[in-house]
Every structure is written in C-alpha cells, then in structure tokens.
Amino acid sequence: MVAEKTDFVSCRSEEAYRQLLLEVSLFFHPDPEVSYRFVADRLSAFYGGATAAITLHQGAQILFKYVANAPEWTRGLCSIPTEDAYCARTLRSNRVTCIQDVRADSEFCRFPTVALGWTRYLGAPIRDTQGRPIGTLCIIDNNHDEPLHALDYELVALLAMRVSVELERERLFEERVAHQRRALEERSRQLERTQSALDAVAQALRAANTTEDPDALAHALGRAFAQVRGVRGVAVVRAEGATHALHTVALYSKEAPLETLPPAGLKRLWRQLAAHPRATLSSALARALGGQSGVARAYHDAESAAGMIVIAYHSDEEDDAFRTVYLEPMMELAAQVMEGYYLRQRLQSMYEDLAQMQQQLIQHEKLSAIGTLAAATAHNIHNIVSSLNLLITLSQDNPERLLAELKHQLDRLKIMAYQLLSYARPRQLVFEEAHLPSLIQRVVDLIGSSAQMARVSIQLDLAPRLPRVQADATQLENLLLNLALNGIKAMEPQGGGVLTIAARRAPRGVLLCVSDTGVGIPEPVRARLFEPFVSNRESGFGLGLFSVKRTVDMHHGTIRVDSRPSGGATFEIYLPTRQPGTGVAHAPSRSGDRG
Image (cartoon, rainbow, N blue to C red; front, side, top):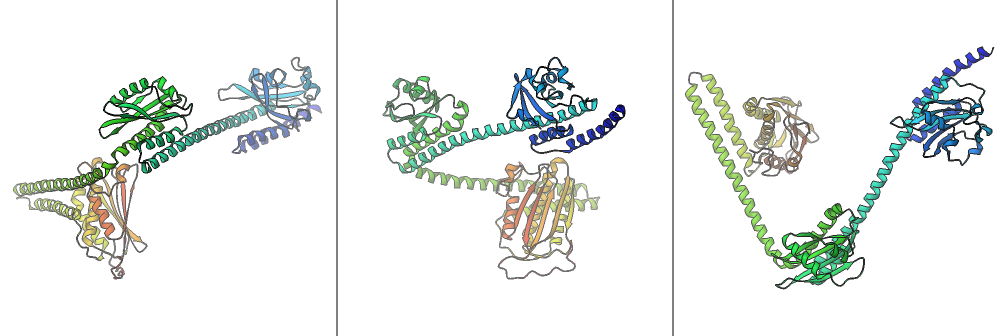
C-alpha cells in the first residue's frame, strides 16, 4: 500500500513539475524583481507553503534578496553569517544540495534554525555569467519525513537558472541606471559650468557695447570671467609705452584679494607671448592667482601687442577639456573685446572695404564662370563640327549611318542651346496650356542619344488623363532637360542605370518626378544644391539646378530632393495647373491627353 501511494504521488508530481516550469517559463515582466519574486512565490506554493528564499553571498554574509512565506521570527532579518547558513554547502559545491533531515547532519544539526522548525533544505546555486556561484534559490521547511526526489532537484536547478538570468538582468539594469545617473550628474555639473561661462560671456559682451573706458572694460571682463565655475583668478594686464611696461589693470582672485602680480613672472610670461599668442602660466604665477594651473592670451592694438589676459584654475578641473572647451574660447572672447575697443574707430572703413571686395569677388566669380562656360561651349562646338566633317568624309558611301550620326550631333547642339538658354537671364514668361506628355516625350527624344551612350535606360510613368498646366513650355522643357541630364551624368561613373520620369495628378496641380539610380548627392552638397556655382561634379558649373529652382519659383511651384544613402536621387516638382493672377481658368483635359 505504501509503494502504491508513492507511485501515485510521483505521477502527480511529474505533471505538477511540468505545469510549474511552463508557468514560470511563460512569465515575463519588464522589472526583473517582479520576475524573480514570482519564481520564489510559485516555488513556495508548490511545496505547500514552504519558505522559498533567494540569497546572495557577499563577503562573510548571506543576504536575503527575497524570501517567500517567511516565518514570523525572520521578520527584519536581512542577512546571516555564511557559516550559520545551510546555503554554505550549496555555495561550496556549486551544485544542487539536499539536506533531507538537518537533525541528522553533523554540520548543521546544532544550528538554532533546527529548533525553530527548519529541518529540511533543498537549494540550487545562482551563478553569474562565468558560472561562479553568487547565491542560492532554496526551500526550507519542516517536512523532513517527506523525501525529495530527482525531479525536485531538477526543478530547483532550473528555477535557479531563471533567477540567475533575472538577477543578471537586474544588475545590467542597475548598472545602466547608475551610468545614466552619473552621466546626468556630470551633465548637470557641465551645465552649471556652461551656464556660468555663458553668463560671463553675456557680461563681457554687454561691457563691450556699453563701456568706453579701457580700464572699466578690463575690470568688467575680470569680474565676469572670475565667476566661471573652476576659475580661481583672472588678471588683465596692459603693456604701456614704447618699452611695454606691464601694468595690472584688473585683478580678481577667489582665494585672497591681490593688488598686483609678481613682476618677474609677468615679464617671463610676456616674453613667451611675444613668440606665441597663448602660453601656460608658471606654477608661481598660477599660485599667486589662487590656482594650480593657468593660461594666458595676448591681445593687440592694430599690429602690436597691447596686453594680456591671464586665467588661473585648479588642476583637478579636468585640465585638457576645461582649458579647450571653456578657457581658450573665453580668452579669445576677452582678447577680441579688448582689441575691439582699440579698433572700433577703424571698423566702419574696414566694413566698407570688405563690402567692396565682396562685390568684386562676386563679379570675378561671375566672369570666371562665364569665361569657363564660353570656353567649354566653344570646345564642345569645335568637337561636334570636327566630328561632322569627319563623318561627311568617311561615311559618304553609307548615307543611313551618316544621317544617324548627323542627328546625334545635332541633338548635342540642341541640348547645348537649351542649357545655355536656361543659364541666361530669364525672359518674360509666356503662360499657355502645356500638354505634359508631349513635352516629356520631346525631352526624352532629345536625350535619347546621350542616354544610349551612357548605357542608361529611360522609363516613363505617366498617369492617364493628366491635366494641362499653365506654364511656359520652353522653360519647362529646359527644367526637365537639366534634371534628366544631371541624372544621366550621375549614373555614368557606375556604367549605366535607369532614369525614370513620372507625372501624376496632385491637388490643384501635378507632380513631376525625375529619378536616377546614380551615386546620390552628398549631404554637404544637398544643403546648397540650388545655389549658383555649387556642383557635385568637378566639371560642373553649378548653374543647371540653379536654373531649375528659378523656373519652379517663376511657376509658383515647389521642388523637393530625396537622395538615399544607398545611391540614387529623386527630384519631385509640384506645379499648379493655374498660375495666380492670370485670370485664365484651367481647361479640362481632353480625351487624347494620355501619357
């Protein structure tokens, strides 16, 4: 009868084991603590309310991370010495440990917990990512007369693995939180320092705009920069007379009030600044200003040095970053403020000279571009004429080939003429109803030879019954021609590709899209794509897309560029079907207007 009862319990337990493992494996919570508490709670319930504990081994102590169904006498107990814990054996062996009856175990039989009712123990190690035991998952109760089986060992071991994962997840989460907290603290410190630096800069700029006296300006700079977090002292020194006698105009120190700085140290620093605009302070001079390190910067009156700004700071203020990010820009600003005082009377004439030079440079750039364009056009015409002469000479016996080549060379001339017209100053626009499919087909016919030579296939995607638009047909042809030729040139380096010209309806207008599968447009060029003289190609003039944008604007449309990192570019142009102020209604599309 006893054997039959044991078999029945074992069969029931196997099903219960599977059910518990399935329940635990399916449970997940973003908070790791909720997950490992769930494991301990379910383990306690599985063994009829036994105490289930998650412990961590730290030094000579066993810490209770979480205890499910803890007895009343354990309330408030956070840890116990390792030598007084059943878990010590599990940690030593790094394997599942079972003490069926603690009273019969020579190592633990005299522990006080035996008298308090903890007479059976089953524990499995919780391991770190290196497989080392860092704690245990265990059950402790007084059911020493109910033997534990291999399935119990396996169950606790598997659940301990789950707890190990959750504790590692908790550790990583806490590390990430701690890292973020440190980063926030550092950011707060940097923001505080940056705010003090910005306040100092604002005070310096206000002083530059409102102070007329040089000594008052020096004092304003000294007061402002002495408030920056990390700065210990500031001095503004002026070199007077032909002998450059050094005179400390303003002196501010957070350590002690000073009237002047050591003359010998100032002279050595002045000699260093004569060879270099910046210099490092000697330790004696830095200490005199209340710091451990420091830097100096000379400022000038016209071409000669007029004085120097000296700043001292503590060496524990992250020397390199503090000096580079804060001190050097601050000294640059202070030097510019002082130099601005001396140069204020001369600025106006300098601005006028600069404006005149700028106009001359712009004019020179225009003339240079015109000259380059004219030379390139003349060169291309010469090549076309030479090719025509050679064809006429060599192909007189093959009139079909001669006519085909003549058409190709004439297309080249026509394209050149279109481009030159688009670069020129725009003439008075003539708005009329334009049939887009016919206009697009003319452009395709015109670029056919160029596309064939570049091994580029042309695809058209024209929606049916496109509305007619009020536009200058010649300008629209120039626009599409420039975009198509740009796309062909973008695909030449990779040996061909696909040029797609699409047109579809849009609210109160149409959308024209010209796409290529070329090399794409770099981000720096994309930001200035429609400016004159900006080109992505060494041989480009930077006028094609400028004229495209100009044409779109004159038609009250918009243009958008999309260039993917993997290559290729798409120009999307919206054109209204009716131009504002023309007073001419849009004519409905005809049945024959199909793409």
